[in-house]
Amino acid sequence: MKGKRFIGKEGSVSSWIIQTMEYDVDLERMLDARLRESGAPYALSAAMGGVGVRMEGRQGLHALAKALSGVLVQDLAPFEVAAMADETPLELEDRRQVLDRAVAAARKREDLHETAAQLTAYLQEEAKLCLEGFLRFRMRSTLLFWRLCVEDAFSGVLLEKEYGEAADVLRLLLNARPPRCPSLRLCLHGDGLCSLTDGEELRMEYVDESGEGIISLLIGMAPARLFVYDLSGGARTELVHALTEIFSGRVCLYTGEFP
Image 1 (cartoon, rainbow, N blue to C red):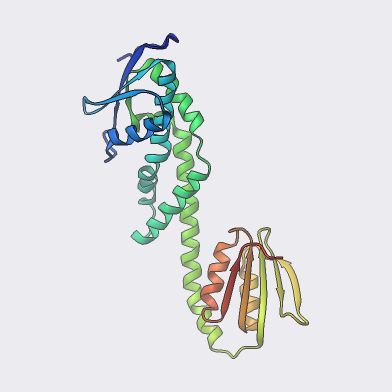
Image 2 (cartoon, rainbow, N blue to C red):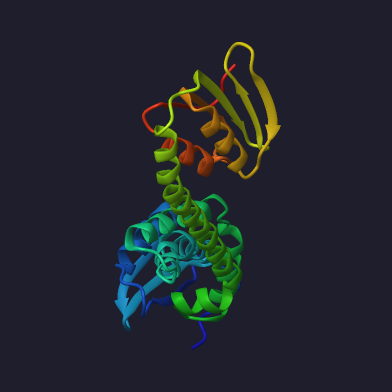
């Protein structure tokens, strides 16, 4: 069914039906919240298993397109990402971590402008919009990006689990030997640089992107206290997590910027 074409006259009113067959959401309430943000006049009503929307003029068209882009890219993203996370071979709690991390990553790079432009062109020609249909067939690059966010989050969670399992063994090994030095200070930088010092004679700097080398070195030196300064801005999260697990009870962690 074709919708009313806009000819640029203010005062003309057009209507659309917005539907979803898959998402268990209160679509009318969701649209109402988004359209209120636009400041444009609108009217909503129940219609044919969906929500009827009436908007005025070209300004109303753009306001609706912007509102729908927010619904698709922000409100419905967790549903799609959750379905992707459920495909991973992880326990429920780990899948929740994947979901939270993937959604957070998607939020950082979301772009509503391109989606709004696509919706504007679509709504000029069509009077009915199925949200999941538009997402699956006209927003494939967005879906691909969400899947990449899920895969990256899955890899991170899996790596942490592997670190955690290895950390249990390494912690037992560490606790079985007496401390060989009173304390060590480790600074971690985002480019992989590690700075290690005992505050007196020892000072080492080298690049260890994997973190395996520094873990092995620290276990061999077996400090009674380990001070870790994470200056990586989150780039060494897995290594920091492993160190706090292995040196549990003897580690102090500091994050942020230091002089």
